[in-house]
Image 1 (cartoon, rainbow, N blue to C red):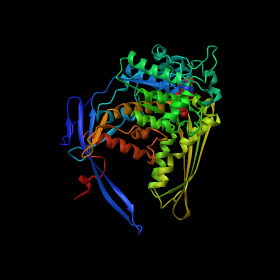
Image 2: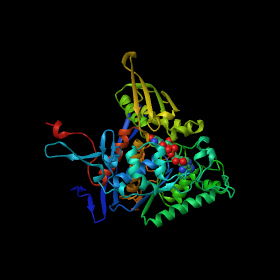
Image 3: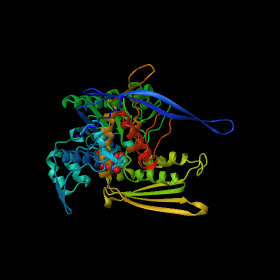
Image 4: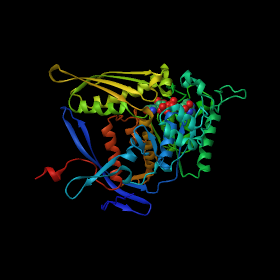
Length: 518
Ligand code: NAI
């Protein structure tokens, strides 16, 4: 892999670390009594330090035996073992298409003729190679991943067969099952459950023991595989929302108490998040439910342990966060968005239940809010657009989710514009590369330290809610008091520029003076 070394006096390399001084510029805008905007430039000097050695990293998936889990392991094994396979279109070589870290590029400057110069995203800094991830995880279903991949119907038959022996070795650990949180139709999958009584009934009165079991699973995985670092990612079924109850899940100490008291509003995903935080292991939530109740967020702050979520932004929503931004930035006023989905995989089966659908509806609905709020010419304060989300289970289409969207907008002088999009998502093949990116980036961000120069000189890691992951997430978890950013281009720009400043490159501005000045 080529290395990038920037000739910048603010950058210092040692064998295994990189230190960069960056002057962060922003503008503070205040409205004065005449309604004028007073803008004051702000400057802060930061020193960033990056550990340049990618550690031996393990990934524990909650929901290992699902479509995403089995597709992820298959993709990594196919790439690692360079397994090509045949389809009716001919031979396919393994790749990581759809992954930003593995298959996209970043512009780092221009060549001597002024032409843009791009490098692979993963050459800008040393990231973990997904082929090197050690993977394990939990599932309430006991099937090994060879059987899971057959059930998922995602991979071509030849690849399923070629991977079969390898996938058989992946067996999910027993997991936590509180039936009230996922659809009743998932009950028959639940044959690998750790919270059962001696007679085999589901036990809802052992939440502290469940938490301890997950902590011990994490420790064992780390030790038995000789890992430096572990990351946990929830790709299990969408749960219903937990009710936020003062005294139960509103603070870290109340939440830990609620676990001890087996409170019914403590969900399996929240138990996994608590276990991860107490083990100092980053936890990412790929589903829409409110795993990160206020008590979890406070716990992550107390332990300085990274969290990120919620809900993978894979197909329909990703496009929405580009298209809505384009319309509003063009001065066109979307007045309604209708989003229909039908899908026939187990995720769709679970979402056919009202409470679980509601979690998804909330996560899908908020995605244009910041975009609308950015334009007070088109939208008055508090104005909303008509935005409806429909999801239907249609077994026949399997993992090939169909997303259909209609964007209805107001144009000049009472005219209207209607854009209709039909998007065949191939759900798990879109979601799996996102898992890779979330994990690779989380691991990397945990190697970044900073201090503010002229401040108290204390080295800190990034704030525990990893906002730079938002590009991959439908409803990005955001620090309390700050606005959630959904626009995809803004999300990518923030991430890309952060990586650039770490190596001493100027941030992307597209001024192109070489061409445009005389
Ligand atoms: P899936 O239904 O195929 O897999 C989920 C797996 O989780 C199943 O194997 C199930 O047995 C297991 N499970 C359920 N509760 C569990 C628990 N408490 N502990 C451990 N395992 C448990 O679903 P799929 O397609 O893999 O999606 C996973 C999640 O990702 C869903 O919540 C889905 O909404 C979310 N998601 C998926 C996207 C996609 O494009 N595939 C996009 C956005 C989010």
